[in-house]
Amino acid sequence: MPTVKKLLCIVVLFVSLIGSLANLRAQALPNLDSLLTAERTKYDLPAIGVAVIRNGKLERICVTGVRKYGDTTKVTINDKWHIGSDTKSMTATLLGRLVEMGKVKWSTTLVEVFPELKGKMHREYDSVTLEMLLCHHAGLPAETCPKSLTPDSLQNLPGTPREQRYQYLKAILAEAPEAAPGSKYIYANSGFAIAGAIAERLLNKPYEELLYQYVFSPLGISSAGFGSMNTPGLVNQPWQHVIAENQHVAIDGGRKSDNPEAITPAGRVHLTLGDWSKYAIAHLVGETDGGVLQPATFKKLHSLPFGGEYGFGWGIVYRPWAKSAEFTSTGKVLAHDGSNQQNYASIWLAPDTKFGLLVVTNQGGDMAEKAVQEIVGVIVKALWVK
Image (cartoon, rainbow, N blue to C red; front, top):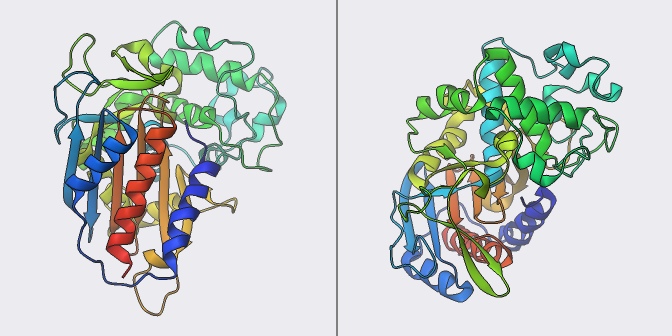
């Protein structure tokens, strides 16, 4: 999964480049078919797609390419795409709902939720709060796999995904933190996995079911799933791809073709661009209109409790092109990239102008990242810069 530090460098590259020339009136949408075809050809990707939201409404979805490299089956606007770490803000949204329900507080500590681990997890983690977990300030190591496990054993933990998450959190919390909790930003998938496990403990249901109950279903999202997109052996959805020895390798679906189930809350969601747009719009309008959450909760999820540029599953910066009025100098930008190294997805939201942009491809790696970010730059510049 791409680090947020890397993402924010990309954010600065594009939005600072165009920010000084920005104006308040959005221009005409560029020819997306031509843009996507050109980028797909330039970087030799199997497929790529984009969704554009303006004034808080989905304006256009465009996709091009094939579900599987070397196959002729074309992608459609109803196909599902893996969004990797863009799952993280969904997990934070779920926990925001639980805060509203009085099931947990942002200040609730790990030892309060898992009292049986007192004395078994490293003592410095006793005081780690939910807020720290969701803002990458829990002191957890950047490395996802605990030292007591191997990547293979993490992928093969026994039991249900919920049982695997509990085994995982016990293993990683037993080890010393990388930094004192609350003292330092460290991008850690484990923090969101643990946050998902907190939701499971509090409501006694699997994370996957809770995400549907409190986030997806209220938003009318029905296509979402977890892990790879296609049915094993079938080209009924996009396949995932990597580049190995300069060759495209198509990866068939299945439980082990994605990140371990233990870290699903950090990055295993897939869904259609149309449904992802529903989620994006909820965050675009939420601070003023509410919806699946109260306005105050959306504002909390779009905040930076520890400073810096990351909070609750979002990279958060302020840029001139995202402003909504002449008397303001900058507007808020929420952004995040996601990849399981076999897909790449990027989400950009400007709540002040109710503008959103989602870009996806079913290939991982540097070429996929470059294509996605070039598309972001071209569209934003075309819409907001004279």
